[in-house]
Length: 412
Image (tube, rainbow, N blue to C red):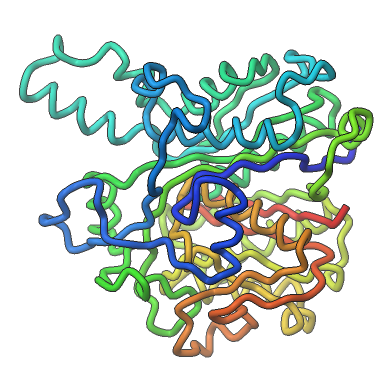
């Protein structure tokens, strides 16, 4: 059994908007969602900027205020985006849905880090008896998926995928496989992250992974010769995946087909990508093979494109190796230039971008591109959106630990 899997609902909480329409409009308008950090005092840090979610009200997204206070922010984002996607798919109060045939697969990188930091402060200042009884449930990474399951009454498999920056992509790929094998009709899949805290920013800073540019509108420069590191972002992206059979039977609107998934390990280094791009190459090939897509059928690549010195040329090398002469015809952009890097949620919101690119015939831009890098010499859709047919798109996510994950989407 190998059922066709389609996308019927989308939900997003992002630095560029707290719903899919606003987010997508801002992507097409080349809006930068990066700004000065407001969540904590940055005086002890060299890094001062991030891509924060703005104006988020959990109650406006279907959460009870008392319940929201018992959730870490990454969980609030996950539930809010899932509620959006569920409604967008027309599944709310839908009698066609059997809760036992609905799964939840959500990727996350770090869990409730702001809760962890506050818990440590209380522990050392006041002692363990003053910790909140909700400390552990709010910290652990699976509580995003668990709370989504409760919110939507989803009683099928509920899993959390933790593969660093590939988490959201791996969650969608694993969800696709669950539906393909007939073990679920519907899976709520994606990623969520909120780690803009002094601890996390400080940890990435001492690794020299983050940009130290103090101009938030120019700091994230994927594929540009002067790039100097990534910008941390936060938010959630959730997709509703269904078997084609189930979606058609209930008359669902279909965005695109999730056609293929590839995942590999570099077995090279904990934080640095393999400069030969062998793992990324194999993951892209695996996704294309799984989708039965020929290289000349793919029109767009949503690149991992972190704006780090090591990632961008490696990823360019991988695309050239897979697509050969076709690589010059492709459009390949990094939307992290606008959203920042959402870590465990990055692949999920970039999957949404890829799907909407197919639907609307749009190639999203890589903004802040000023100085060409000879090692990154493909068409990265510099600075402004372009229009054109997108028959199929791939989205790449390459995480710490050598986790490589790629999704292939096809026009339905």
